[in-house]
Length: 340
Figure 1 (tube, rainbow, N blue to C red):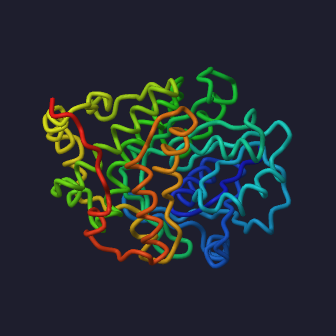
Figure 2 (figure 1 turned 45 degrees about the vertical axis):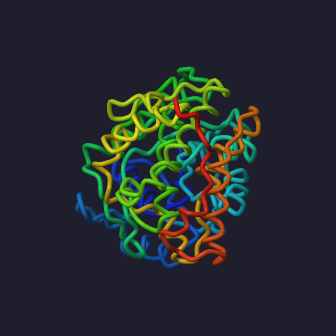
């Protein structure tokens, strides 16, 4: 069986190294020429919470010649236009793409290769790209989880096959409600990762700003409304049902705000990758986050005014229309709720 990882950044480098070590024939594919050259010359070096140097085979997309049974797709969604044509060209007719990006990536991948050739995959661990050939594992190895599933929730042989393969790179689990898991994580990321970018700070900065926290809560509320209209049932997260955070009056919102502190307080030091991208002049993945809520909201007839606004603000920051500063939160107009 011939495997590939498309997008061998921090996560892809580590997963590819571990799958290679486990004996799989896998190519690590990335557009960074120096990274590919170093991987081939020195191997994939993993530091941080794992110490490993593993010889691997790496390619740039232009060097691809093989056809693959399974492609683990890990590029940033902002690179879909350039990456997906290579995936479609080099996937075997009966091959499968495991969409492992942020947001709800299965739809875009399915448009490129056919929805019948797509599985969903959620990566539940973190890593940082250090330099060409080197990635830092920031999650404990025992927490390197994957959630794998069909979009219709059915248990299939290919789900079982992918789960078996990923045992060589962590702890995979198959799920019948993958979209529910995705929507839970999407809701949290849209509320706090995006607001972290808007205020140019951390999750803690969002929690400590009444206006930013109210904005995050309204993003959350709109996301739940879209999920309900779409028939999506969110999954639990760290013991919390995200639907319990919903509100319809100002009194209810005031009562629910401490719950956001309880859930997100342990993560107050997180600084969103969107902010790093903006600071580095790279396009942020805002369309993969709040843009999905806006798109699905339009599809299902649900208004998403706060999500619409933060998409425009984040894009404005990237386009240097707005400064990277906490004052951007004042650009958000919040809905007026009934008092009780």
